[in-house]
Length: 208
Ligand code: Z5A
Ligand code: MG
Image 1: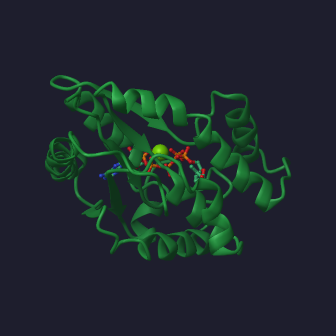
Image 2 (image 1 turned 45 degrees about the horizontal axis):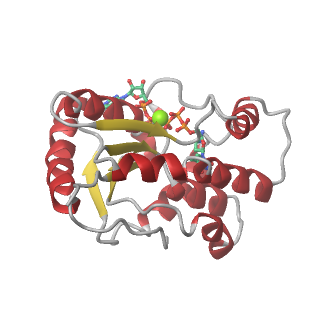
């Protein structure tokens, strides 16, 4: 039977180090395994370009429900590619996924269940690596505050919403205040065992 790849998702508050770790993991794993990197939002597609203009230009006004649905649509447009990649035996390292969508929109005050609905049915992650960091530490990191949502009060709400998910068995919480190399070592050992464990298991769909 053909081995399938794993879906490895990274989540955490802004500036916790997701993109740094995603890149490190990709660079190291690709020496010995077949892996691909994906990030959401994918700002390259037409939907992603609209999202990018909303995030970077405060003059761009969109109803909160509309931008939520665009973020979700941006994941749905990657679904087929994700499934093909996994079935070909390649693993995917994903920088943000549906939990970012739900946490950011619910933090604005949208109904939590309404926020979850559009992402139901997407490919489910085999593991969610949650990079746990205090807001105070995140604020000290580079470029904090440049995008629309990077205020302390808002990030606190986002953090609480993420942390409601931490007990889910597929979530692995890591200490993101460590040096990047030490954090990478923790993450790598989690990921190597997940990739092996799921090789012959069916891929689930997201229930969130
Ligand atoms: N959003 C949403 O609302 N709905 C959705 O469905 C989705 C997203 C998918 C853009 O996302 C926004 O979209 C985001 C959520 C919302 N909100 N905002 N604002 P994005 O993923 O494109 O955001 P980003 O620009 O990549 O930033 P980020 O993800 O918040 O940062 P990060 O990837 O977690 O951190 P980093 O870029 O790896 O590192 C940040 C800085 O810290 C940098 O200077 C590093 O050198 C430094 N760093 C990294 N690791 C460390 C350690 N371990 N120690 C010290 N310093 C470190
Ligand atoms: Mg990032």
